[in-house]
Image 1 (cartoon, rainbow over the protein chains, first blue to last red):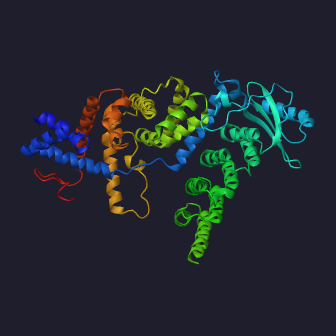
Image 2: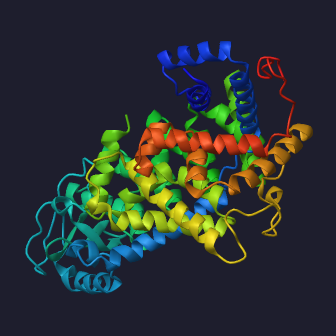
Length: 311
Length: 206
């Protein structure tokens, strides 16, 4: 190896990108060549200085702002997407929801008793595919999405308007698998925060169902509406004591959620469930959270849990 | 492995599921911002670069054919935007890309993060001085060399990944990196302990 080649090889060597054979050849050259050793020493010095460079991570505020604005822009882009199939576009248009809500009143007389009552607004909808996959969002096969929703508190009947290839409406109890599937799809896919919140309300007592639970955990992780994340915790809370995955999801929210209200709600849910992994997280939060109320509440919770463990 | 889950998300996003796309974005956007912040002057500019990168990807998502990884594709878009930015900055009157020190009216130290409580003040000060000097030296590099340098040292990418993202050969990347190192070595000669021939400061325990 000559000096020219050696000087070109020093940087890859020090960056850990030289193969064993190259490494041996360079090292042999360096052992015999003082001038290349100087270059090598200077390179080491430079790399050490680079290591002292402050690692400027993007601030949480900037990241949040970027994500929110992108989210808004994507919503607008989706509306404008001329290629988008009908059921994608329709759920962005409030006018449709209003029209179907009206249809709901007209069809109300048919919503008697239990079970599904297809309203003769359009043809009977094809049964939506089960939401086994979280990513089936706009798949036409699973394309039903809800665009209006109302719950009758006296009869506990849910009336939903939906879009598939045709528009329609079904009425039934939340526990009905088809209604539940529509609600889950709404929680997962709707761009309309109001509808997502309504669907979350309707699913409140359904966290025992795994598809509901999955949708709730996803909402808790990703929904950009803090109200929706809050409702997700509330619906999941009942399952927290028995389900470690649910506790994990709430714990993530506790440590990462940007909204103090959501974090406080997570403290309450986890303190009630008292899983084994909760105490260290509470203690950490009590020390480090940027919100003083969250620090206070997690400190209280940690103390109570600690006292209970000692007993 | 994240690839199967990622492929699923890509598929859903290609069918128009904006939320799946957002989930993909959230896997990589911190890296994108970190890289962008190395090239732009303000958080607002980094924000704009972020939006442009991901919206461009969303618009062209149906052309993504898994010929490279999603991450590589992302880096292609982002590095192109960074290069455009650097070139624009270089031709903008009064804001030369290869700015001599102080010429642009911005002290490179000002952009560095404030020291955090609990950190060793002397070390932080040294870090800030070195950081400022490195910053100034980097601005004198050609855009592509600077990009390669930051991708290697700030993002921790290997030559092969950088070559894929820049659509060039590994050898070209290594050459750019060597040139960047040489220029930085010269620019920072007077900083830190003196190098005495025959003594390796890394082994001398500095």
